[in-house]
Image (cartoon, rainbow, N blue to C red):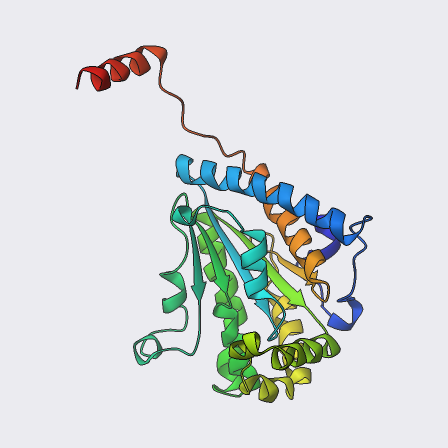
Length: 274
């Protein structure tokens, strides 16, 4: 299943070739998908607890996509019930003066996971070949070098024990328009609406080109990109949960060895007489 959406290294990505309405990897209905997602949530809770207890592996999940593509929704739905003690969400907004005084990866590196941790990047270092490129915040001669720099950065993380999964949440213009209209129609969701989203929407074509180049140039064996059909929220969540759980299962994460019966009895007696 993972091969269906995984970008093979060296592949030239054309997003028009990927259907954002695709649900072909699930043969049931939406209700059945929700039931499967609940089972995956339970398994993810177990795996995350083992990950934290073992303290060996590090997991980084990168979420990228256009405004309204569902990055927050993925975090709420896929990670529902996961113990926050071993999971962090890092959001990267406009760089602060301190961050701008350093190289663009400085603020990213310090947010990467430690042993036993799972970290979710809600937007990421890829903003520096997306927003920066589209808005011409630096010359082309600068951002074009960043693809190789990002690949090298992620390879370093991988070689130091970090498992990296990168998800591009693929929606189309019509779906984004409807989601923005839905936010305006519901007063409880007005806080989600940002007039700046309309300015970004006007640059859709430039963003698609920037994403195509980023996906083509930075999907690697050690840090693969997955293009996730995201017009159907339930399907988006299901596929990401499947991929994440499958990846964690492949790590063969183990709980630490339990105490011996002798030690259990010794500690029990100490508690009883203490």
